[in-house]
Length: 397
Image (tube, rainbow, N blue to C red; front, side, top):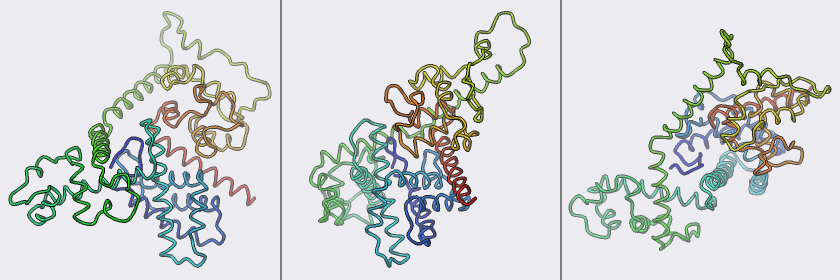
């Protein structure tokens, strides 16, 4: 199931869950494990696992490993979930119980992360429980579709779902070609026919029980995004590729030796203007001045000169900046966004989007870096892993 902003609601989740559970068993071999130590051990373990986990974990292009790492860092940013997990874990928990508790923790966390991202993408309120309800309805649709496809073997249950006796091939079998054709009353009858999620004592779906109108709205939302993303975002990915090619060509022209100069080139002149820097600035992290950066910043609603001013405001001889000097400013800001959050008193004003007074979003930073969002996440997570490794080595020396 795909919903706007979500990454953990597709079949690849099972591989992500297994990978996190497998690595957690090794991490918990250490006694009295705190959250920071757990994240360090887990990140190292996730980078060590075989290349089979580099396969796709969803249809957006995120690998199983990427999704596991991102969820691990989300856990670090939400220590309350870790505290709840620790409180629920018996002192003498065996391997089976430990794996179950870890699975429960990450299953809850994935819905929290996806519900937050859904709200950002749509501007509509969405709780983790609502994400769970979307998933239940998607599962119900697929189960109904399976029964319809083999109606002869399940004539009684199909009849119960349709509300009539089935003696020949129901027309609904051909009509329901997608979740858009699944009717709310079928979901309710399906659940009743098998003692499903809408007919148990659990109050998790209380708002949907005997509420076909609400079920219909949620089915329509799933169907709407399924239709919008039927081409798996090939349209905007193509546009992104064309934009990247255009910028590559642009920089190639600028880098080429000038053959003729019939008129002064204002862009080149601007590029060659000297920049007055304070004498005490230590040029550890390279300062990159791109003449096209104003247009790129404007494309994501950031002010002109954002990249240059953000670079100048950075403490370029700090330990973190030196460790990430090869990563580029957008990646470094993405690291701070992940580890410290979008707002912090230590951030220079030049790093923040004036509209939000917070660091740019990952989407904005991806455009500034000229890469896709999954690629930026991968580079950010790799930079964080290197920082953690360097910090460990620093402590041992």
